[in-house]
Length: 117
Length: 113
Image 1 (spheres, each protein chain N blue to C red):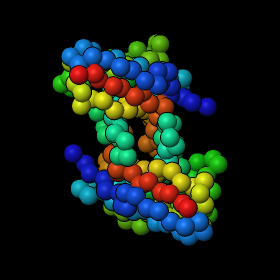
Image 2 (cartoon, rainbow over the protein chains, first blue to last red):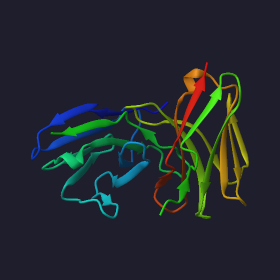
Image 3 (cartoon, each protein chain N blue to C red):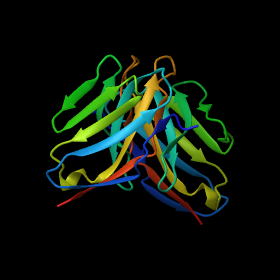
């Protein structure tokens, strides 16, 4: 099946620093990638949608200047958490859709546990 | 506004019995539904999907049922195995929304050996 690789799986950083998370589609071209955030015991919250070569579309309430998303190629999207604060600590998951047609399942990365101290 | 709801946060089932996980949705435009399985500290894994033109889709031990009039879908796992213990999310999408998926809050399934 389709594989999405997310790196790093776990990162601890100090408050005020920036952290970059990578999401790669390994065996397919991802026309669209999604970034989610999951709080404990809660659902996946969609943060933004990115299409290759264009600006990401952010969901309401998500600060685009804080969560920078770059989808530079059909196999790579990055999420940069800028000037991280302890409240940004969370589990971040990316997903990708390969086919451009409808009714294609999302394929998820394994997530990144971010802890801001 | 939660458009996809899983009202049971947890479920315990004996090994070998049937597990039934339920999901309700409010948006009548949804026409593609999926179930994902998630272990702690991992990303969700796609399990099974169903489009609105069907009312049942089966894949091995997993069957998804869709009741469009009730805006309800369910996932049946039979027989349940201890390895099935995980959090299960249902998700839905609608044509024309750019592959945007809406997720339920998840149901934690525990299969007791």
